[in-house]
Image (tube, rainbow, N blue to C red; front, side, top):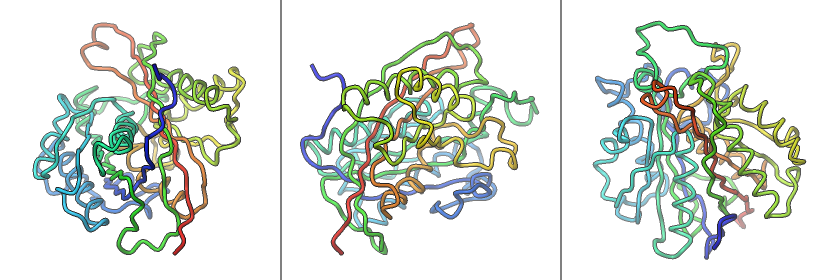
Length: 345
């Protein structure tokens, strides 16, 4: 039984991607990469939860528009968020005529959706799939901690939930989007599903520590099975371990004999100016890796600045119920391997 690296039966490409973000994200270093933003984080809605749903609608609609296709040209849609029962996805994607499966992988949801879309499209069951994920700072805070009006103090290890949504359209053909003058096609060559690990972390304000061992486990398994060394990849991108989790991951990988100091970056550290914007340990949330990969990382691959990249989306599989009962926080890390190909255009 195959439990490690999974290879699609046919080639699979990132045909299109789109990102929607809020005001804090537009003040960060990746602002020029995003497609749509709202400085007030409202997106025309009267509640934060409805705002998150609207971000998902906008992100998927933007990705579809870039391809010049109809929603009925997509075989299946995989989506998730941080709200109870994935309400952000369920309501935000109602208008699309696409068969739908809801996902919950916490902050690893973008990677989880990419893994599933790659395997379904790569198997030949469907020619094209889409995946979407999102988070909203104000909605997530009042669900997992306290409403922002409470004014609670954030610890140095805490991360700032990103307000954003990322969408990807995955398919069997390399299609050049309208207005795309970049010469690179982005293939997803293989994926690896993560294992749930629990190292007894109970601090909901230190999710990086809970997720880092799972990221290390997935990377270790991948390097061992593939026979490749970390330095053979242009980038090793983790989901949102933040400052604390990234330090832990790098030490764990060094101990395992796979040092990643030279080419490791983390979405939670890329999306904000951590010190200038007072984001403590960096960014987090389903939207963090979704918008960073859908914009900045995919752009690097399309432009050929990065030829070969591993993306490990990490998630802290916590809930208010389990943490209030003194339970620990399991972690997960799913891997997606991107390769850039030069187009003959």
